[in-house]
Length: 135
Image (cartoon, rainbow, N blue to C red; front, side, top):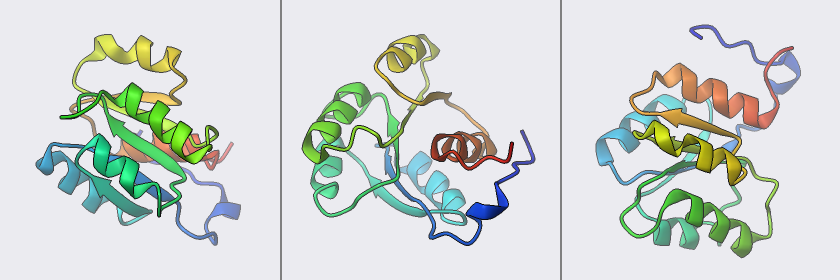
């Protein structure tokens, strides 16, 4: 997973916008710094902030922590889909609890990332969600 091959046709496109919803400031900052090399990152620390943000930002991928201070990640993504009408936007769940994986996938999440994780795994999952991995 150290090397990620991206479809050459995707390299000239505008960077994808990732909405990262993570209440742990350390995780959010580190992940944002790493992802900003490849994507436009919009970071929110709560579900309420994310719902307010999607009124003005149209993300290409939702990267959401399961356990937020005001809502769980599954409910948040459902609310975002209802608010925006864009259920086709892929969502990726981040959690330190692997026992939540099946519930997330059953709820329609594209994928699940267990904390702690290598940053390359997050990029791979985002690229997969965007359909941009070389085949």
